[in-house]
Length: 290
Image 1 (spheres, one colour):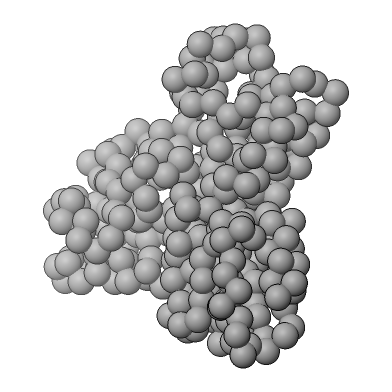
Image 2 (cartoon, helix red, strand yellow):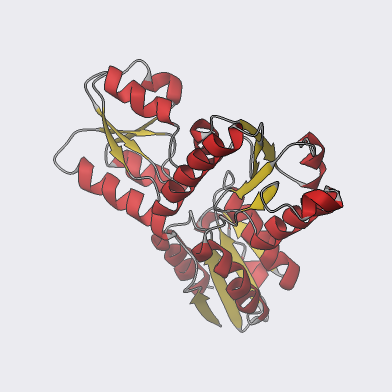
């Protein structure tokens, strides 16, 4: 039996940057605060906690003063930075560059569209930290679409500017865009200013979908490693399951079952953008013992 780790899996560039910044800052210090989990993976969070990184909530941040706090790749709304100034907190900004560009775009667009009584529409998870950060950039009304059914929240008599959370599905974003377009009347459809869609899905993340389909089809069994609280892990695992019914989701090597590999020649190990490389390697080594 051969075991292969998916070369296109694991941390995306933004998460890798945040983790490296955290490890650099904690060197020579007893502790470093991080606002929220640096990544949606409990195994990685536990590893960094052992190094002295303390993960805090926004409520806990309000009680701190004169400390260093890391802002993770998801980004934060402007009020977090203002709080840092007021509390003399040194904010170490590890916001992903892709997210930063999107924040700036949303903020600029919101100022323009507000003059026309327009709406900012974001395709994403309502409680996701990135989406909360994007909402904070907007001076105009913001509507969050988690699925096609949420389209009813939009006022189709007012201008619309559509964006996407960077980790959403590219194909789902296109479906949402076309659905909104179909709801507009003919004059609105021909008015480019009335409806404008910005495909802000991260290209690095979106390319994984196609590559993962190929990886899933070309292995007998897929073991997908991810955190239970990671929306990206759930989404990518769904792709594996769709193209290979013998796909299994695990948080770590302890959840692997030997029976999965009976009569199997090729095993593929993959993971989410929030799954560390070391964890996928551990899972692969465990499988090899069978």
